[in-house]
Length: 140
Image (cartoon, rainbow, N blue to C red; front, side, top):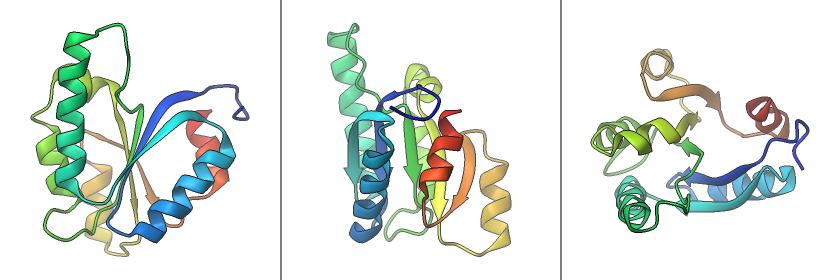
């Protein structure tokens, strides 16, 4: 169990780098803070997945499948992290309220950090690599 005893149902990783996704998945699993991890290597599949979860939630409201946390990369081809946020804004109020988004990026651009830190859906801005210490700080 996580240091604080708090445990999430699901966490979603959205990153085009499969190695980063694998490493982050293993760090999260070792931290034992969630029941399951959803992996997406692009924005389009992540948004479509969330839309499908919303449909399932309408049919089975007693089952919570939405991710509690979304770790979102910034620099991705085709659609970047900010474009994910634009699409996320079109989802249901329940989804937007339930899912906490953590920007997890290797970007060193101060403008990216500033934009992310001032965005209404970004709860925290972290630089890669993700560490167990940061995970435990999130659950406290």
